[in-house]
Image (cartoon, rainbow, N blue to C red; front, side):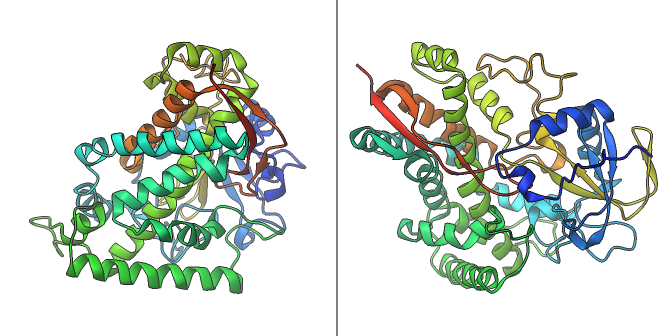
Length: 413
């Protein structure tokens, strides 16, 4: 059995407090594509797990949902997509297996159509222009709080029909799942975390009741009233709606903000790419995909083996946790030429930033639109982007995020 080298603990969140530790995972990929991780003092439930490090091995796991379950496996009562076993496995869309996953996904997708996303573009461009102009006028700003985080929150409010005045409170409630501050272990429950979860649940319950009684032209209203012929039940239950609301808000408010903020960090580190972007005056689709590859907001996902099987020469037993590191796959030297070069013209770019297979990200097109809009407005209005202080990263091995990003934006011309 190939094992994680001594001294490497992928469950120690301090290892990730300065961003994703690519040097560690480069070393792991060179050892083996799949490695056994013994439990440490930081490992949830005191259980070891399989660490899947290479692009090919990650793709094998994600494209075999029958063998690698998003819900559970073996005699495990529940599993999920985090290292911690979660009771919501099987209830949230990202922690469901088919056929229930497909039923819920089809109902949810009725409210997340290409038409609905496309009609947001003009509004998002106008909002982004205001955000960027205000930041330029101030000179120094926290790019995360004032642009990268602000636009996705506004966008998800518009899409779901959430009062925009509530966006910062909602983010405060869900931030506990993305940033484990103060030495807290991953997904450790505290009184503060419990109060936030209760508040989020109560808010979602009231909002869903409002959409059921008074539907409007927004995604949550569409999903609340969507029906699927031949399914039982034909509509989403109250519980499914509640979990959908929480999941979409969390994903929509957090992951894209980190991709946008991470893009600015990369453009500072690779000034030739910023010059090329400004010369083009707009972001290409290739540029957007490279930003997703480079920033990899979702560092890992987890599955549970449903049966004994062999994975790249290792015997995996039913019920064992299998963690695949998409952020590591996105730097795999066997797939990406010069993987540590930020290249906005990279093609091909088979990254795993939006997942793959049955759980491919439902909001991928919205994320692409938001990234492109911000890049376009920066190109149109900003001459220089200068980091004025250290990047402050979130403390998490599940999500690669940026908490604060001090920058100075200089007006073009």
